[in-house]
Amino acid sequence: MASTSSYSYLHKSPQDILHDIDFQLTLEPALLTKLTKSFLEEIHVGLGRYGEDMAMVPSFVTGVPDGSEIGTFLALDLGGTNLRVCEVVLNGDKTFRLRQQKYKVSDQLKTGEASVLFDYLADSVDAFLTTHPPESPVDPTSNLTSDVLPLGLTFSFPVEQTALGSGTILTWTKGFSAKNAIGNDVVKLLQDAFDRKHMHVKCVALVNDTVGALLSRAYTSGGCILGAIFGTGTNGAYLEEVAKIPKLANNPAAANGGYMVVNTEWGAFNNKRTNLPTTPFDSALDRTSINPHFQAFEKFISGMYLGEITRHVLLSLIDAAPRSMLFGGKATKVVNEQWGLDTSVMSEVEEAWEAFVDEGYTVEPNHKMNGNGNETTNGTSNGTVPNEIGENPALWDGDDHDVLPRWDILSSPEGLAGLNSKIKGKLERVRKVLVKKLEYADGEIGLRDAAIVRWACHLVARRAALLSGVAVAAILLQTGRANFLQDTQEASTAAEETTTTSTVPNVNGLNGVSHDTNGRNAIAKPSPKEENIVVGVDGSLIQFYPHFERTMRESLRSIVGEDIERRVEIGLAKDGSGVGAALCALQALKQS
Ligand code: BGC
Image 1: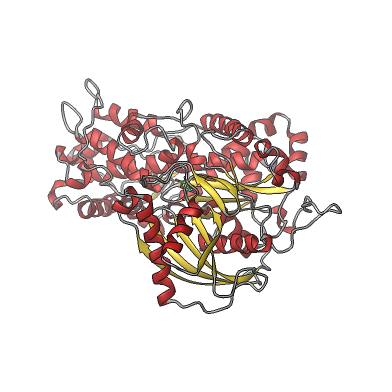
Image 2: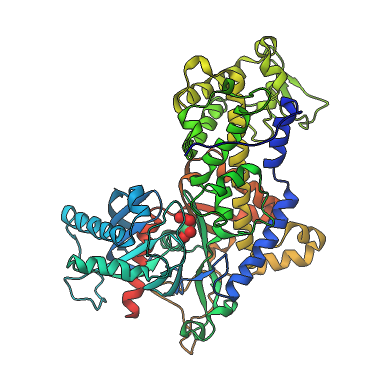
Protein backbone atom coordinates (compact mmCIF):
# COMPACT_ATOMS: atom_id res chain seq x y z
CA MET A 1 0.00 0.00 0.00
CA ALA A 2 1.41 3.39 -0.93
CA SER A 3 1.36 5.90 1.87
CA THR A 4 0.48 9.51 1.91
CA SER A 5 1.74 11.90 4.51
CA SER A 6 -0.14 14.96 5.61
CA TYR A 7 2.04 16.64 8.16
CA SER A 8 1.77 20.38 7.97
CA TYR A 9 5.19 21.95 8.04
CA LEU A 10 4.26 25.17 6.26
CA HIS A 11 5.72 28.38 7.66
CA LYS A 12 8.41 26.60 9.63
CA SER A 13 12.13 26.66 9.04
CA PRO A 14 13.79 23.30 8.36
CA GLN A 15 15.58 23.51 11.69
CA ASP A 16 12.30 24.12 13.49
CA ILE A 17 10.74 21.18 11.73
CA LEU A 18 13.55 18.92 12.93
CA HIS A 19 13.18 20.41 16.37
CA ASP A 20 9.47 19.69 16.44
CA ILE A 21 9.94 16.06 15.50
CA ASP A 22 12.74 15.71 18.01
CA PHE A 23 10.55 17.17 20.71
CA GLN A 24 7.63 14.88 19.92
CA LEU A 25 9.73 11.73 20.01
CA THR A 26 11.74 12.59 23.11
CA LEU A 27 10.55 11.30 26.48
CA GLU A 28 11.36 13.02 29.73
CA PRO A 29 11.93 11.06 32.97
CA ALA A 30 8.78 12.51 34.52
CA LEU A 31 6.71 11.03 31.74
CA LEU A 32 8.35 7.63 32.21
CA THR A 33 7.37 7.68 35.87
CA LYS A 34 3.84 8.76 35.04
CA LEU A 35 3.51 5.98 32.49
CA THR A 36 4.79 3.45 35.01
CA LYS A 37 2.09 4.52 37.45
CA SER A 38 -0.64 4.02 34.90
CA PHE A 39 0.98 0.72 33.90
CA LEU A 40 0.64 -0.44 37.50
CA GLU A 41 -3.00 0.58 37.51
CA GLU A 42 -3.65 -1.51 34.42
CA ILE A 43 -1.84 -4.44 36.03
CA HIS A 44 -4.24 -4.26 38.97
CA VAL A 45 -7.30 -3.94 36.79
CA GLY A 46 -6.21 -6.89 34.66
CA LEU A 47 -5.51 -9.08 37.68
CA GLY A 48 -8.98 -8.30 38.97
CA ARG A 49 -11.15 -8.86 35.92
CA TYR A 50 -11.24 -10.84 32.70
CA GLY A 51 -11.66 -9.02 29.41
CA GLU A 52 -9.39 -6.06 30.14
CA ASP A 53 -7.01 -4.60 27.56
CA MET A 54 -3.95 -5.73 29.45
CA ALA A 55 -5.16 -9.28 29.83
CA MET A 56 -2.90 -10.38 32.74
CA VAL A 57 -3.38 -14.02 31.81
CA PRO A 58 -2.88 -16.60 34.59
CA SER A 59 -0.69 -19.30 33.02
CA PHE A 60 -1.41 -22.06 35.53
CA VAL A 61 2.33 -22.50 35.84
CA THR A 62 2.74 -22.43 39.59
CA GLY A 63 6.44 -22.29 39.99
CA VAL A 64 9.68 -21.88 38.17
CA PRO A 65 12.18 -24.65 37.53
CA ASP A 66 15.45 -25.06 39.35
CA GLY A 67 17.42 -26.82 36.64
CA SER A 68 16.91 -30.38 37.88
CA GLU A 69 14.11 -31.20 35.45
CA ILE A 70 14.54 -34.19 33.13
CA GLY A 71 12.76 -35.34 30.00
CA THR A 72 12.51 -35.19 26.22
CA PHE A 73 9.76 -33.23 24.57
CA LEU A 74 8.65 -31.88 21.26
CA ALA A 75 8.02 -28.16 21.13
CA LEU A 76 6.21 -26.17 18.51
CA ASP A 77 6.73 -22.44 18.51
CA LEU A 78 4.46 -20.10 16.57
CA GLY A 79 5.49 -16.60 17.39
CA GLY A 80 5.77 -14.06 14.67
CA THR A 81 8.47 -14.24 12.11
CA ASN A 82 9.09 -17.97 12.08
CA LEU A 83 7.58 -21.26 13.01
CA ARG A 84 9.93 -23.62 14.80
CA VAL A 85 9.69 -27.26 15.67
CA CYS A 86 12.19 -28.61 18.16
CA GLU A 87 13.06 -31.60 20.21
CA VAL A 88 14.27 -30.55 23.62
CA VAL A 89 16.19 -32.81 25.95
CA LEU A 90 16.29 -31.50 29.52
CA ASN A 91 19.35 -33.02 31.15
CA GLY A 92 18.45 -32.16 34.73
CA ASP A 93 21.67 -30.28 35.38
CA LYS A 94 20.62 -26.84 34.08
CA THR A 95 21.66 -27.88 30.59
CA PHE A 96 19.62 -29.00 27.63
CA ARG A 97 20.05 -30.23 24.09
CA LEU A 98 17.93 -28.97 21.29
CA ARG A 99 17.43 -29.98 17.68
CA GLN A 100 15.28 -27.66 15.67
CA GLN A 101 13.97 -26.78 12.27
CA LYS A 102 12.49 -23.46 11.20
CA TYR A 103 9.66 -23.15 8.70
CA LYS A 104 8.32 -20.06 6.97
CA VAL A 105 4.81 -18.87 7.61
CA SER A 106 3.55 -17.09 4.50
CA ASP A 107 1.28 -14.06 4.66
CA GLN A 108 -1.39 -16.20 3.07
CA LEU A 109 -1.23 -18.63 5.99
CA LYS A 110 -1.22 -15.79 8.50
CA THR A 111 -4.37 -14.25 7.08
CA GLY A 112 -6.24 -17.26 5.62
CA GLU A 113 -8.40 -19.91 7.30
CA ALA A 114 -7.20 -21.03 10.74
CA SER A 115 -7.65 -24.71 9.86
CA VAL A 116 -5.20 -24.29 6.97
CA LEU A 117 -2.69 -22.62 9.29
CA PHE A 118 -3.02 -25.39 11.88
CA ASP A 119 -2.75 -28.08 9.20
CA TYR A 120 0.49 -26.42 8.18
CA LEU A 121 1.70 -26.54 11.78
CA ALA A 122 0.91 -30.26 11.95
CA ASP A 123 2.64 -30.82 8.59
CA SER A 124 5.73 -29.07 9.92
CA VAL A 125 5.84 -31.30 13.00
CA ASP A 126 5.40 -34.30 10.71
CA ALA A 127 8.24 -33.14 8.48
CA PHE A 128 10.44 -32.58 11.51
CA LEU A 129 9.77 -36.05 12.86
CA THR A 130 10.66 -37.53 9.49
CA THR A 131 13.99 -35.74 9.34
CA HIS A 132 14.68 -35.93 13.09
CA PRO A 133 13.35 -39.26 14.40
CA PRO A 134 12.95 -39.08 18.21
CA GLU A 135 16.24 -39.87 19.92
CA SER A 136 15.44 -40.45 23.55
CA PRO A 137 12.48 -41.76 25.48
CA VAL A 138 10.01 -39.28 26.90
CA ASP A 139 9.78 -38.51 30.58
CA PRO A 140 9.55 -41.79 32.50
CA THR A 141 6.74 -40.49 34.73
CA SER A 142 4.55 -39.79 31.72
CA ASN A 143 1.14 -41.45 31.50
CA LEU A 144 1.24 -41.35 27.75
CA THR A 145 1.65 -44.60 25.91
CA SER A 146 5.17 -44.95 24.68
CA ASP A 147 4.39 -44.30 21.05
CA VAL A 148 2.68 -40.97 21.74
CA LEU A 149 4.98 -37.98 21.73
CA PRO A 150 4.13 -35.17 24.17
CA LEU A 151 4.38 -31.70 22.71
CA GLY A 152 4.41 -28.27 24.30
CA LEU A 153 3.00 -25.46 22.18
CA THR A 154 4.49 -22.00 22.46
CA PHE A 155 1.82 -19.75 21.06
CA SER A 156 2.87 -16.12 21.28
CA PHE A 157 -0.43 -14.35 20.95
CA PRO A 158 -3.00 -13.27 23.52
CA VAL A 159 -4.78 -16.37 24.82
CA GLU A 160 -7.05 -16.62 27.86
CA GLN A 161 -5.56 -19.70 29.39
CA THR A 162 -8.02 -21.98 31.20
CA ALA A 163 -5.52 -24.64 32.24
CA LEU A 164 -1.95 -25.62 31.52
CA GLY A 165 -3.13 -27.39 28.39
CA SER A 166 -5.93 -25.23 27.05
CA GLY A 167 -6.72 -21.62 26.24
CA THR A 168 -8.93 -19.49 24.07
CA ILE A 169 -7.44 -17.19 21.45
CA LEU A 170 -8.34 -13.58 22.33
CA THR A 171 -6.91 -11.63 19.40
CA TRP A 172 -4.23 -11.91 16.77
CA THR A 173 -1.22 -9.60 16.77
CA LYS A 174 1.97 -9.09 14.73
CA GLY A 175 0.31 -9.27 11.32
CA PHE A 176 -1.68 -12.47 11.87
CA SER A 177 -5.43 -12.45 11.27
CA ALA A 178 -6.33 -16.07 10.45
CA LYS A 179 -10.08 -16.49 10.28
CA ASN A 180 -12.18 -18.63 12.62
CA ALA A 181 -9.54 -18.83 15.29
CA ILE A 182 -10.54 -16.18 17.81
CA GLY A 183 -12.68 -17.62 20.58
CA ASN A 184 -11.45 -21.17 19.92
CA ASP A 185 -9.18 -23.32 22.05
CA VAL A 186 -5.78 -23.17 20.40
CA VAL A 187 -4.71 -26.55 21.77
CA LYS A 188 -7.81 -28.16 20.30
CA LEU A 189 -7.20 -26.49 16.94
CA LEU A 190 -3.72 -27.98 16.89
CA GLN A 191 -4.71 -31.41 18.26
CA ASP A 192 -7.50 -31.67 15.66
CA ALA A 193 -4.91 -31.00 12.97
CA PHE A 194 -2.62 -33.74 14.38
CA ASP A 195 -5.57 -36.12 14.58
CA ARG A 196 -6.67 -35.36 11.01
CA LYS A 197 -3.23 -36.59 9.99
CA HIS A 198 -3.32 -39.56 12.39
CA MET A 199 -0.11 -38.37 14.02
CA HIS A 200 0.95 -39.85 17.34
CA VAL A 201 1.59 -36.50 18.92
CA LYS A 202 -0.32 -35.04 21.85
CA CYS A 203 -0.27 -31.37 22.71
CA VAL A 204 -0.14 -31.40 26.50
CA ALA A 205 0.84 -27.83 27.34
CA LEU A 206 0.33 -24.32 26.07
CA VAL A 207 2.73 -21.55 26.86
CA ASN A 208 3.35 -17.97 25.83
CA ASP A 209 6.89 -17.12 24.67
CA THR A 210 7.36 -14.80 27.66
CA VAL A 211 6.44 -17.60 30.04
CA GLY A 212 8.88 -19.77 28.11
CA ALA A 213 11.59 -17.13 28.51
CA LEU A 214 10.97 -16.95 32.26
CA LEU A 215 11.03 -20.72 32.69
CA SER A 216 14.05 -21.34 30.52
CA ARG A 217 16.06 -18.61 32.20
CA ALA A 218 15.10 -20.07 35.58
CA TYR A 219 16.09 -23.55 34.38
CA THR A 220 19.55 -22.45 33.30
CA SER A 221 20.27 -19.94 36.05
CA GLY A 222 18.35 -21.24 39.04
CA GLY A 223 15.84 -18.41 39.30
CA CYS A 224 14.11 -15.67 37.35
CA ILE A 225 11.30 -13.24 38.10
CA LEU A 226 10.44 -11.86 34.69
CA GLY A 227 10.55 -13.20 31.17
CA ALA A 228 10.30 -10.51 28.53
CA ILE A 229 10.33 -10.39 24.76
CA PHE A 230 11.52 -7.38 22.80
CA GLY A 231 11.38 -8.67 19.25
CA THR A 232 8.75 -8.65 16.52
CA GLY A 233 6.29 -8.11 19.37
CA THR A 234 6.75 -7.27 23.02
CA ASN A 235 5.37 -8.76 26.20
CA GLY A 236 6.35 -9.93 29.67
CA ALA A 237 5.44 -12.68 32.14
CA TYR A 238 6.26 -12.63 35.83
CA LEU A 239 5.75 -14.59 39.01
CA GLU A 240 2.77 -13.21 40.93
CA GLU A 241 1.26 -14.14 44.27
CA VAL A 242 -1.95 -16.06 43.64
CA ALA A 243 -3.57 -13.99 46.39
CA LYS A 244 -3.08 -10.95 44.18
CA ILE A 245 -5.01 -12.46 41.27
CA PRO A 246 -8.59 -11.92 42.41
CA LYS A 247 -10.06 -12.94 39.09
CA LEU A 248 -9.03 -16.54 39.71
CA ALA A 249 -11.87 -16.44 42.26
CA ASN A 250 -13.12 -20.02 42.78
CA ASN A 251 -10.72 -21.63 40.41
CA PRO A 252 -9.04 -24.55 42.20
CA ALA A 253 -5.71 -22.94 41.35
CA ALA A 254 -6.62 -20.07 43.68
CA ALA A 255 -7.19 -22.38 46.63
CA ASN A 256 -3.63 -23.67 46.39
CA GLY A 257 -2.20 -20.22 47.04
CA GLY A 258 1.47 -19.75 46.34
CA TYR A 259 2.65 -18.19 43.13
CA MET A 260 1.63 -18.31 39.52
CA VAL A 261 3.28 -17.04 36.37
CA VAL A 262 1.12 -14.33 34.82
CA ASN A 263 1.43 -13.39 31.17
CA THR A 264 0.77 -9.65 31.23
CA GLU A 265 0.18 -9.10 27.48
CA TRP A 266 1.66 -5.66 28.10
CA GLY A 267 1.64 -4.91 24.37
CA ALA A 268 -1.94 -3.76 24.98
CA PHE A 269 -1.01 -1.28 27.70
CA ASN A 270 -2.89 1.99 27.27
CA ASN A 271 -4.77 0.92 24.15
CA LYS A 272 -6.85 4.04 24.68
CA ARG A 273 -3.66 6.07 24.20
CA THR A 274 -4.56 8.44 26.99
CA ASN A 275 -1.00 8.51 28.31
CA LEU A 276 1.25 7.18 25.59
CA PRO A 277 3.11 10.00 23.84
CA THR A 278 1.40 9.45 20.51
CA THR A 279 2.70 11.42 17.52
CA PRO A 280 1.11 11.78 14.09
CA PHE A 281 3.60 9.14 12.91
CA ASP A 282 2.22 6.65 15.42
CA SER A 283 -1.32 7.47 14.41
CA ALA A 284 -0.51 6.98 10.75
CA LEU A 285 0.95 3.57 11.55
CA ASP A 286 -1.98 2.55 13.70
CA ARG A 287 -4.62 3.67 11.24
CA THR A 288 -3.17 1.59 8.43
CA SER A 289 -2.36 -1.48 10.55
CA ILE A 290 -4.55 -4.57 10.53
CA ASN A 291 -5.45 -4.02 14.17
CA PRO A 292 -6.08 -0.29 14.71
CA HIS A 293 -6.53 0.65 18.38
CA PHE A 294 -5.02 -2.62 19.56
CA GLN A 295 -1.52 -3.30 20.88
CA ALA A 296 -0.85 0.40 21.42
CA PHE A 297 2.24 -0.07 23.59
CA GLU A 298 3.64 -2.76 21.32
CA LYS A 299 3.33 -0.38 18.38
CA PHE A 300 5.71 2.03 20.12
CA ILE A 301 8.22 -0.62 20.99
CA SER A 302 8.52 -3.70 18.91
CA GLY A 303 10.53 -4.64 15.88
CA MET A 304 7.48 -5.10 13.71
CA TYR A 305 6.69 -1.40 14.00
CA LEU A 306 9.80 0.73 14.54
CA GLY A 307 10.77 0.72 10.88
CA GLU A 308 7.28 1.77 9.91
CA ILE A 309 7.20 4.67 12.39
CA THR A 310 10.57 5.82 11.09
CA ARG A 311 9.33 5.52 7.53
CA HIS A 312 6.49 7.90 8.38
CA VAL A 313 8.95 10.37 9.88
CA LEU A 314 11.08 10.20 6.73
CA LEU A 315 8.08 10.54 4.44
CA SER A 316 7.01 13.67 6.26
CA LEU A 317 10.41 15.21 5.52
CA ILE A 318 10.45 14.00 1.93
CA ASP A 319 7.04 15.62 1.46
CA ALA A 320 7.80 18.75 3.48
CA ALA A 321 6.37 21.80 1.75
CA PRO A 322 7.24 24.12 0.21
CA ARG A 323 10.64 22.44 -0.01
CA SER A 324 11.51 18.80 0.52
CA MET A 325 13.97 18.21 3.34
CA LEU A 326 15.07 14.71 2.46
CA PHE A 327 16.36 12.75 -0.52
CA GLY A 328 15.60 15.68 -2.82
CA GLY A 329 11.92 14.82 -2.53
CA LYS A 330 12.31 11.38 -4.07
CA ALA A 331 10.74 8.33 -2.46
CA THR A 332 11.84 4.90 -3.64
CA LYS A 333 9.57 1.85 -3.50
CA VAL A 334 11.09 0.87 -0.13
CA VAL A 335 10.34 4.24 1.37
CA ASN A 336 6.96 4.55 -0.26
CA GLU A 337 5.45 1.21 0.65
CA GLN A 338 3.84 0.31 3.93
CA TRP A 339 6.28 -1.83 5.98
CA GLY A 340 8.92 -1.05 3.32
CA LEU A 341 11.48 0.04 5.90
CA ASP A 342 12.52 -2.88 8.04
CA THR A 343 13.65 -2.28 11.61
CA SER A 344 16.85 -4.17 10.79
CA VAL A 345 17.77 -1.29 8.44
CA MET A 346 17.53 1.11 11.37
CA SER A 347 19.83 -1.18 13.28
CA GLU A 348 22.32 -1.18 10.41
CA VAL A 349 22.19 2.60 10.21
CA GLU A 350 22.97 2.90 13.89
CA GLU A 351 25.73 0.31 13.67
CA ALA A 352 27.28 2.18 10.77
CA TRP A 353 27.29 5.31 12.87
CA GLU A 354 28.64 3.57 15.94
CA ALA A 355 31.45 1.85 14.10
CA PHE A 356 33.88 4.65 14.75
CA VAL A 357 33.29 4.52 18.46
CA ASP A 358 33.93 0.81 18.41
CA GLU A 359 37.20 1.50 16.67
CA GLY A 360 38.32 3.38 19.72
CA TYR A 361 37.28 6.90 18.95
CA THR A 362 35.78 8.22 22.15
CA VAL A 363 35.73 11.63 23.69
CA GLU A 364 35.32 12.20 27.39
CA PRO A 365 32.34 14.25 28.44
CA ASN A 366 33.43 17.82 29.03
CA HIS A 367 36.01 17.51 26.32
CA LYS A 368 35.78 18.21 22.70
CA MET A 369 37.93 17.84 19.69
CA ASN A 370 38.93 20.99 17.93
CA GLY A 371 38.91 21.26 14.18
CA ASN A 372 42.35 19.65 13.96
CA GLY A 373 41.36 16.69 15.99
CA ASN A 374 43.31 17.84 19.04
CA GLU A 375 41.53 17.43 22.31
CA THR A 376 40.68 20.55 24.25
CA THR A 377 38.82 21.06 27.49
CA ASN A 378 35.37 22.43 27.08
CA GLY A 379 35.21 24.55 30.15
CA THR A 380 31.95 26.27 29.48
CA SER A 381 29.55 23.78 28.04
CA ASN A 382 29.92 21.09 30.68
CA GLY A 383 28.29 18.69 28.27
CA THR A 384 25.06 20.64 28.17
CA VAL A 385 25.42 22.17 24.74
CA PRO A 386 22.71 20.69 22.53
CA ASN A 387 24.42 18.10 20.41
CA GLU A 388 24.22 19.15 16.85
CA ILE A 389 26.09 18.38 13.73
CA GLY A 390 28.88 20.85 13.41
CA GLU A 391 32.58 21.07 13.43
CA ASN A 392 32.57 20.07 17.04
CA PRO A 393 32.78 16.29 17.06
CA ALA A 394 32.38 16.09 20.81
CA LEU A 395 28.76 16.57 20.03
CA TRP A 396 28.90 13.07 18.60
CA ASP A 397 31.02 11.32 21.08
CA GLY A 398 29.24 8.03 21.03
CA ASP A 399 26.75 9.06 23.64
CA ASP A 400 23.25 8.41 22.47
CA HIS A 401 21.64 11.66 23.43
CA ASP A 402 20.82 14.57 21.25
CA VAL A 403 21.85 14.08 17.73
CA LEU A 404 19.64 16.73 16.25
CA PRO A 405 21.10 17.57 12.86
CA ARG A 406 22.11 21.18 12.23
CA TRP A 407 20.41 22.07 8.98
CA ASP A 408 22.55 25.13 8.22
CA ILE A 409 25.83 23.29 8.58
CA LEU A 410 24.71 20.27 6.63
CA SER A 411 23.17 22.32 3.87
CA SER A 412 26.14 24.41 2.88
CA PRO A 413 29.35 23.29 1.19
CA GLU A 414 31.34 25.31 3.74
CA GLY A 415 29.48 23.71 6.63
CA LEU A 416 30.10 20.24 5.26
CA ALA A 417 33.71 21.09 4.55
CA GLY A 418 34.12 22.14 8.17
CA LEU A 419 32.95 18.81 9.54
CA ASN A 420 35.56 16.78 11.27
CA SER A 421 36.74 13.88 9.13
CA LYS A 422 35.58 11.32 11.68
CA ILE A 423 32.08 12.70 11.55
CA LYS A 424 32.20 12.69 7.79
CA GLY A 425 33.36 9.08 7.94
CA LYS A 426 30.44 8.12 10.12
CA LEU A 427 27.98 9.90 7.88
CA GLU A 428 29.46 8.34 4.80
CA ARG A 429 29.06 4.90 6.32
CA VAL A 430 25.42 5.62 7.07
CA ARG A 431 24.95 7.03 3.59
CA LYS A 432 26.25 3.82 2.03
CA VAL A 433 23.81 1.72 4.05
CA LEU A 434 20.97 3.94 2.90
CA VAL A 435 21.92 3.79 -0.75
CA LYS A 436 21.90 0.02 -0.55
CA LYS A 437 18.93 -0.61 1.69
CA LEU A 438 16.60 2.14 0.58
CA GLU A 439 17.48 1.55 -3.05
CA TYR A 440 18.62 5.02 -4.03
CA ALA A 441 21.24 5.79 -6.65
CA ASP A 442 24.55 6.79 -5.13
CA GLY A 443 24.22 10.43 -6.14
CA GLU A 444 20.71 10.76 -4.75
CA ILE A 445 21.69 10.72 -1.09
CA GLY A 446 23.97 13.19 0.62
CA LEU A 447 25.55 13.45 4.04
CA ARG A 448 22.71 15.64 5.25
CA ASP A 449 20.23 12.90 4.35
CA ALA A 450 22.40 10.41 6.19
CA ALA A 451 22.45 12.59 9.30
CA ILE A 452 18.70 13.04 9.24
CA VAL A 453 17.94 9.36 8.80
CA ARG A 454 20.37 8.35 11.53
CA TRP A 455 18.77 10.88 13.86
CA ALA A 456 15.24 9.65 13.04
CA CYS A 457 16.22 5.99 13.59
CA HIS A 458 17.86 6.89 16.83
CA LEU A 459 14.90 8.85 18.17
CA VAL A 460 12.39 6.13 17.39
CA ALA A 461 14.54 3.32 18.81
CA ARG A 462 15.50 5.29 21.87
CA ARG A 463 11.86 6.01 22.63
CA ALA A 464 11.14 2.28 22.28
CA ALA A 465 13.89 1.30 24.69
CA LEU A 466 12.85 3.91 27.24
CA LEU A 467 9.27 2.65 27.11
CA SER A 468 10.50 -0.92 27.49
CA GLY A 469 12.09 0.23 30.73
CA VAL A 470 8.66 1.39 31.90
CA ALA A 471 7.30 -2.14 31.56
CA VAL A 472 10.23 -3.73 33.40
CA ALA A 473 10.10 -1.10 36.14
CA ALA A 474 6.38 -1.70 36.62
CA ILE A 475 7.01 -5.40 37.26
CA LEU A 476 9.77 -4.61 39.75
CA LEU A 477 7.35 -2.31 41.55
CA GLN A 478 4.44 -4.72 41.36
CA THR A 479 6.50 -7.52 42.90
CA GLY A 480 7.81 -5.31 45.68
CA ARG A 481 11.37 -5.30 44.46
CA ALA A 482 11.53 -1.57 43.90
CA ASN A 483 10.06 1.75 44.85
CA PHE A 484 9.68 4.80 42.70
CA LEU A 485 12.89 6.79 42.81
CA GLN A 486 10.77 9.80 43.66
CA ASP A 487 9.40 8.08 46.77
CA THR A 488 12.79 6.69 47.71
CA GLN A 489 14.23 10.12 47.58
CA GLU A 490 11.41 11.57 49.64
CA ALA A 491 11.43 8.98 52.37
CA SER A 492 14.78 7.40 51.84
CA THR A 493 15.39 5.40 54.97
CA ALA A 494 12.03 3.71 55.28
CA ALA A 495 11.73 3.09 51.59
CA GLU A 496 15.19 1.61 51.36
CA GLU A 497 14.35 -0.95 54.00
CA THR A 498 11.29 -2.04 52.06
CA THR A 499 13.37 -2.47 48.96
CA THR A 500 16.07 -4.57 50.48
CA THR A 501 13.86 -6.83 52.56
CA SER A 502 11.18 -7.63 50.00
CA THR A 503 10.42 -11.35 49.81
CA VAL A 504 11.29 -13.11 46.67
CA PRO A 505 9.11 -15.84 45.34
CA ASN A 506 11.94 -17.41 43.41
CA VAL A 507 11.33 -21.07 43.56
CA ASN A 508 8.60 -23.64 43.59
CA GLY A 509 10.61 -25.59 41.05
CA LEU A 510 8.58 -27.58 38.62
CA ASN A 511 10.38 -30.62 39.85
CA GLY A 512 10.56 -29.76 43.47
CA VAL A 513 7.67 -27.47 44.35
CA SER A 514 8.11 -26.62 47.98
CA HIS A 515 5.05 -27.27 50.07
CA ASP A 516 3.93 -26.17 53.48
CA THR A 517 2.54 -28.73 55.90
CA ASN A 518 -0.90 -28.49 54.29
CA GLY A 519 0.54 -29.44 50.96
CA ARG A 520 0.10 -25.96 49.50
CA ASN A 521 2.83 -24.24 47.59
CA ALA A 522 4.86 -22.48 50.22
CA ILE A 523 6.35 -19.05 49.88
CA ALA A 524 9.92 -19.71 49.14
CA LYS A 525 12.92 -18.52 50.99
CA PRO A 526 14.82 -15.82 49.18
CA SER A 527 17.37 -17.51 47.00
CA PRO A 528 21.06 -16.78 47.26
CA LYS A 529 20.69 -14.98 43.96
CA GLU A 530 18.29 -12.50 45.51
CA GLU A 531 20.93 -9.87 45.37
CA ASN A 532 20.36 -10.00 41.66
CA ILE A 533 16.95 -9.56 40.14
CA VAL A 534 17.06 -11.99 37.26
CA VAL A 535 15.23 -11.10 34.07
CA GLY A 536 15.23 -13.46 31.09
CA VAL A 537 14.87 -11.79 27.72
CA ASP A 538 14.65 -12.72 24.10
CA GLY A 539 13.97 -10.99 20.81
CA SER A 540 15.84 -9.28 18.03
CA LEU A 541 15.71 -5.77 19.49
CA ILE A 542 17.21 -6.59 22.85
CA GLN A 543 19.73 -8.92 21.26
CA PHE A 544 20.85 -6.93 18.28
CA TYR A 545 19.68 -3.30 18.27
CA PRO A 546 22.61 -1.10 19.30
CA HIS A 547 22.27 0.14 22.89
CA PHE A 548 18.71 -1.07 23.36
CA GLU A 549 19.49 -2.60 26.75
CA ARG A 550 21.63 0.35 27.78
CA THR A 551 18.81 2.78 27.07
CA MET A 552 16.29 0.53 28.78
CA ARG A 553 18.52 0.60 31.84
CA GLU A 554 18.68 4.37 31.65
CA SER A 555 14.90 4.35 31.84
CA LEU A 556 14.95 1.96 34.79
CA ARG A 557 17.37 4.23 36.61
CA SER A 558 15.14 7.22 36.15
CA ILE A 559 12.06 5.35 37.41
CA VAL A 560 13.37 3.16 40.24
CA GLY A 561 16.87 4.46 40.83
CA GLU A 562 20.35 3.23 40.18
CA ASP A 563 20.62 0.91 43.17
CA ILE A 564 17.82 -1.25 41.85
CA GLU A 565 18.82 -0.95 38.23
CA ARG A 566 22.27 -2.25 39.05
CA ARG A 567 20.80 -5.37 40.63
CA VAL A 568 18.77 -6.20 37.56
CA GLU A 569 20.56 -8.99 35.74
CA ILE A 570 19.28 -9.11 32.19
CA GLY A 571 20.21 -12.36 30.47
CA LEU A 572 19.26 -14.04 27.27
CA ALA A 573 16.67 -16.76 27.70
CA LYS A 574 18.34 -18.94 25.15
CA ASP A 575 15.88 -21.00 23.15
CA GLY A 576 13.27 -19.90 25.67
CA SER A 577 10.29 -20.88 23.57
CA GLY A 578 11.46 -24.44 23.06
CA VAL A 579 12.81 -25.04 26.55
CA GLY A 580 9.84 -23.29 28.16
CA ALA A 581 7.37 -25.42 26.21
CA ALA A 582 9.28 -28.54 27.25
CA LEU A 583 9.23 -27.52 30.91
CA CYS A 584 5.49 -26.88 30.76
CA ALA A 585 4.89 -30.17 29.02
CA LEU A 586 6.79 -31.81 31.88
CA GLN A 587 4.63 -30.08 34.47
CA ALA A 588 1.47 -31.06 32.57
CA LEU A 589 2.49 -34.72 32.44
CA LYS A 590 3.22 -34.74 36.15
CA GLN A 591 -0.21 -33.31 36.86
CA SER A 592 -2.07 -35.74 34.58
C1 BGC B 1 1.76 -11.12 21.70
C2 BGC B 1 2.33 -11.78 22.94
C3 BGC B 1 3.77 -12.20 22.69
C4 BGC B 1 4.57 -11.03 22.19
C5 BGC B 1 6.02 -11.39 21.92
C6 BGC B 1 2.69 -10.01 21.22
O1 BGC B 1 2.22 -9.51 20.01
O2 BGC B 1 0.49 -10.57 21.98
O3 BGC B 1 1.56 -12.90 23.30
O4 BGC B 1 4.30 -12.69 23.89
O5 BGC B 1 4.00 -10.52 21.01
O6 BGC B 1 6.14 -12.39 20.98
